[in-house]
Length: 480
Image (cartoon, rainbow, N blue to C red; front, top):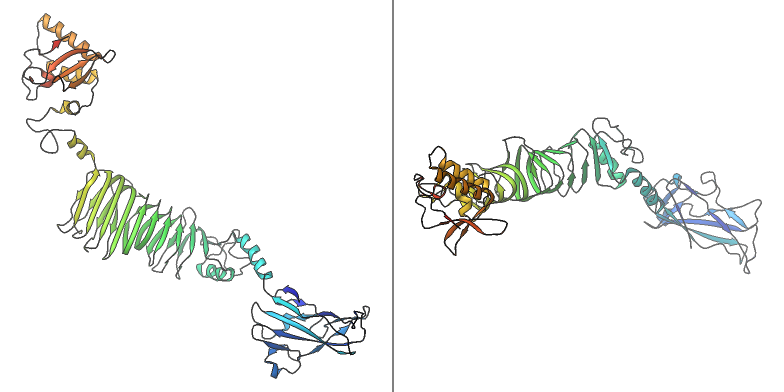
């Protein structure tokens, strides 16, 4: 069976050759054609160009005409169907159908015509055309709210060079092109219908206002996103400003204003604050909402955790966390590095900061004072915190400590010379503790020899180790 493919509205030539029993051409034969539609098994009525149930067809067979200059070659040629089957003349067309044309030779006896012809209408040809159009559109429908053009021709409008200006036109074109991808080139696009399972790319300062519509299963990349939304989304490299009903996954995006979560799990990955200066954006919870924030940089204020099921994990790269007094239930876990936590939460909200480090925590860890903050009486002097912790000080730092204790005090020439010699050694030396010999050592970093030593059991008179500030009255140093 021969197969041809055409677009609806075109004319397909119906041509047949009649031969005798040994294959010789037969001129002057009587040959007719009959056309059946496969989608419903209706037959074509040549009287009114309509496909019908066979029993109601008035003229199912159409005679073919022999070419005047080609013996034994016959064709369909009527007033309506000029030189073939005109699919544009069919009154009850069905989309993407298949027609089967058969032939019947009634005279002369023994003559035969060709086998059936299969005519595929809008199949493969249409797909090829659609592929070409899709390539022209780069697989997307383009929207420019500021300078687009109205129109719904799927082969013209919505292309990169001729974007449409409304969502309604874009949806019409998308349906015709069977695509679910938009590019918003410029302007503020306010949704007027749901956009479920769409992919939308926003350029530069273009913006989408959700306006309360569902965007479930959709993905947004770039631009600014605002307003009330429903459904779960994926957002990448965008800016979120005052979004309510947020649910899903957000990555590599800036955040500002007030973000209100929806019930369910929302995650932020490698996001950052878009708020300059000392201000922060606000993350608000509702019943059933949970949130994970990973690799986040910037300030954040957490509010309205009132459901015991509310949970939040925040991992700061450099953070400024604030917990509002409206947080009275749930669990908050804060990790990473940042400024000291401002915790105004109520007693029902559990806050864990065991994995969080800030300046005060580091400062407290470097002191032997019993309480946080400045050293209290009886603790190691603030100048020597790092020294006692085992951190090596340079000679210049130790000399500054020395000068602080001896400045303005008189000494004999011998004592002055002794002090000058000690200062010279301090300037070129390094200080360390020697737990084996229970002493403090000033050593030469070149050959690792001890220049000065002080017993750690006697802090009484040596100013640089005097924890209570006793006057400098003798030198405990033992020169070696």
